[in-house]
Image (cartoon, rainbow, N blue to C red; front, side, top):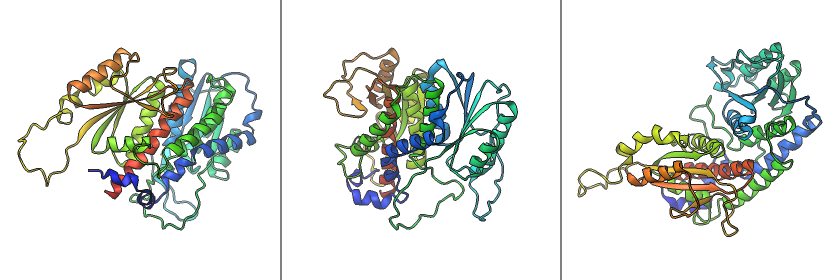
Length: 414
């Protein structure tokens, strides 16, 4: 059981946040501005493409792959954007310093057989030491693909990008002040937790490139607006804001002791739901099932008819439960993008939609509400009413990223 009073103790949250995840998320807006500035300085602003590529392949792992999925959601059906996940893993080689290598250093990627001179390969890495990504760049160069590589300056991947005539863009790492806190030994040294704000260092140069290529219909100042939105979200979700005014703390408390089903209506909300599931696993150590409407209604139906979906305990009501752990129950979190339906009185950020909301719903959303109600499962709906899809996506991701971190910190202290 989560002791939600911990969420209202900023000092306890700071002590628990040993890798300063909250501070990294608070600096996400600054990361977007810095990444955009560095990409322009590296030559992206001088890029004059002849036309759009036939397909865009986005290779990476972790948040880099999530950024590719977001780019695909924003591009829609007008452009073919395909995330390229790793397909194999080998024992990584020890680097020159003798430090134990990360598992990701041994990952391997394979270029699709149809990729060729009409296509663009975008590679993004926060480490720059993955030999598999270097080999992938060499494959793409041999086939005549155009190449863009985002990696830390001076890394092996950044150096390889120059050899294959790629456009090299710098990866913007988090810069956190040294507060003298001792490092916490990792439970799995070769599988370290990812920087929670790394997504924006991968996504910013991708979106800036997509604007140049005409893959998206974003406004020219879209990324600057995203940075401002992330700054505002950091203020709303700051650690010293009380739980009843902090939407991320409220969402974290709501998900405690539950098995979340993260449902989404539309591709924008779908990308946010998939991101939230990954952050809950990485930051809170909680499993979550994510999927888009209407498919989830059939895919997750068995969850409602099973033990987790029961609204009442079928066992003896009068037995002593003092020594028993609290039972897990389902919690449906429905994310939506409903542009133009908000009112000036609504708070900033994604708003929790009341059950008796009179605004029109799609049949899939209405059926989701009926399914949850029929099995006494709590359904909570959050909607972003921002018209711009990128801003709506950032709106949802900012809230859920903070919620995942708060849930993990509070659970660790309980």
